Image: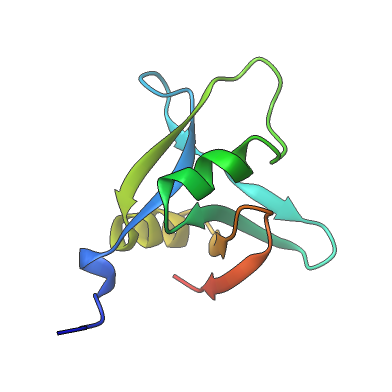
Amino acid sequence: MNEEKTASETWVYVAVEDPGGDEKFLGLYDENKSISYIPAFREKETALACTLNLPRREGKKYEVQAIMLDHLAEDARRNGFMIFMLDAEGRILEQINP
């Protein structure tokens, strides 16, 4: 049976800045579209591959972690971010408006 999972059952992978400290999701800003977004991925391997090429703040440690999509969406909504599901090259596969 191939049932579609709801956001509360879906795990995604994100880059977390300062894991174990003042943790926060890696958020980016698209100047062309004036959009703040959190890059997210369906698979951990894809997240690891793409995160190496995403802009990051110097001197900060980053770690890829799994999170439930609904928890990520709640945090994104609270902080004015969208969620972009990306592939390993950083291309947008899906835009999620939390």
